[in-house]
Amino acid sequence: RRLSRDPGTHQPLAYLRLRRAIRNVIEHRDIEPGHALPSERDLARVLALSRVTVRKAIAGLVEEGLLTQRHGAGTFVAERIIKPMSRLTSFTEDLRARGLNPRSEFFERGIGEVTPEESMAMNLSPGVAVVRLHRVRYAGDEPLAIERSVVPAILLPDPMLVDDSLYEALEKRGCRPRRALQRLRAVLLNAQHARLLHVATNSAGLSIERRSFLDDGRVVEFTSSWYRGDIYDFVAELHTD
Ligand code: 16G
Image (cartoon, rainbow, N blue to C red):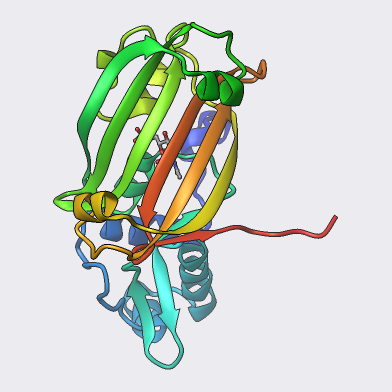
């Protein structure tokens, strides 16, 4: 009776356990990006699970973007970063889930007065203080994106509170964003952005603007970013009403 009352001891379904186990393998880089997973049949045999269970676990990870399938060739650990657009996650969280090492190099991490354009976008009174972060985001040594974030200083009083993850710093202050509006546009990366991202000038990129909100409607961040088009897929799930 004690056991059945403890939710932690409920055994998850076999496919969910396998899904978690494969995710662990990817996070620990036991199989490198681009490399193949053992075949469905081999996994089922070695793990003594049914093919249906294995297929279900793999399908879930394909949906999450951690695995990709090539017709007739098998299942591979994803090389491109596939980012589900319906979940409000941070760069740090997304990379960690893929076993990558998120890092930032800051150009700017300071406090200043909101500009007229920012005050409009963030619905702030003219002249209030904002924290500004301007950084290149890396996976290990590989630059993936450039981001410029503006956060009201009333929510985040000191830019040095952001060690590497903005969302971690906001979470600690009890103001992690709950909702966001995001706009994506195709761009050619200019010489300066291309150099920072280690790609050729005029390579394809995505210009992304995110405005995130607290439950009470206040804007937490206004972030403009440039993501490498050769690495990122942004994927959304669509429903009919
Ligand atoms: C993502 C967000 C960005 C947010 C950042 C926080 C997109 C396009 N942008 O990069 O708006 O500020 O995550 O990440 O997804 P952090 O907590 O690692 O600093």
